[in-house]
Length: 395
Image (cartoon, rainbow, N blue to C red):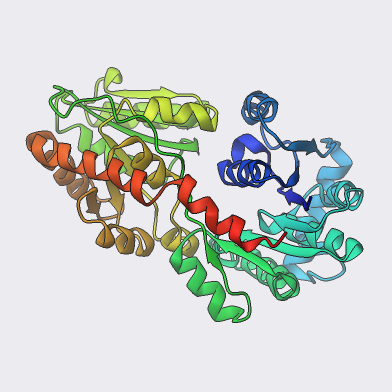
């Protein structure tokens, strides 16, 4: 049996993509181990549900938050930004528990090591070198441009240039990310694995419901994510439209959004804030809504070319989609005209026009909901997509 190690700087509940991959590989008969680190308290609370039902093994790297480690990381960041990224500095900046991760991975012999973010790539490389194994990398993002920060881009570029030429098993999450990496590393030959899920039970809400229900989710509910324009648009509908937001919401952001709602004369019952839930639970909430919001921004550049799990979660649940006009979503929605509406980024008038289209023409809403669900069943379905992953691995 081939042994495969998946490595991330996060943890299972923060990365549905790595969990799907681990499940698919284990179900196919591979011996799978996942290595991760504690990233947040809310995710730790949901990790147990995932791990207890998994056919793969999870190893959480022992971490601490000692003041010395924080000061060391801060110092390394300064050195990487202003002096040099060499001598293992960039690796430790990108993965704050780098040495402990390397020690953990080095103790597990395997045939294939797949890193699931840039911080894990050098860890996977070290283990692959030790055991003469294949190195894999899953590029869910275009890492050198995932932040509007020239220093971060330089550090990420350094790591990509150093390690990606050694990768033999390479997957990406969107066509445009594949295009970017192919232009930089022609020998990589990326395989496109969309962020799709298993098709869920048909959306249980009828298009005849009096109140139009819209949903958005992420790990964090915060400023500058397109929600301001949505809330402004909601003020025009006198309670006929309701919005559910799922994610971590601190006191500062709660006050910020409460104030926005007050400015636009929106009753607090119109916007429902929910705490983060496990990846499995998100579907049970989404399918109670008519429309899903995919409000990606044009900047940083990575957000312009990525296809996140939001849009595919909505499809799997049979929701119509209101998507911002990023390069990737523009391309995707042009391929699938009858599942949703494209809107301008951060434009309340454009979003309001899309909402009105669904609120006052329930036939279009019903059609888009049905076509969305059908697309999830027939094309964008993990039962289908995972076969591309499995075909890459030679027993």
